[in-house]
Length: 191
Image (tube, rainbow, N blue to C red; front, side, top):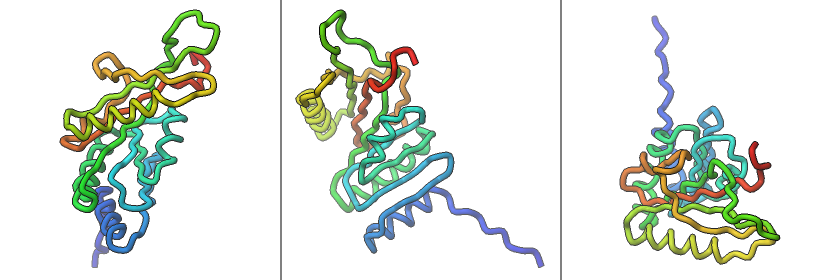
């Protein structure tokens, strides 16, 4: 008699099962997928903070501070998870937004020779729906309206054709999104 091999469930099937338990029993999702990939959801919320990649300490900290987040190395897998979650959460909450959070490649000085620290860059992009445009507008207003002690943020448009940073939206399909990139002001310039 040959032993029957048990096939491991696909990550998406596992997430689907986790979502069932979340909706049915209120059980939070804490799922590790190896290589540092992690899905963490405290409760059903109409958003998912996503970070694709590594070596961006501040972006990882920002995303992992959320009650609903996904940290992965592969944008394609992130898109699959986001599409699955969007379908399920939209049915429950009525809306769903992916916050694609990352860092810009470098901290560019936006002004020359000033007696104080220059502003730092936050770049934003969103989809074309009214909800996505409203989310972008509100995020931009909140970010630019913050009083900062040392360096104030300056909000610009994130143009993916002129940037080398990873982009999740190429893998999201019709899922509403807001892309946020901020300058890595915690790094020593040139490192």
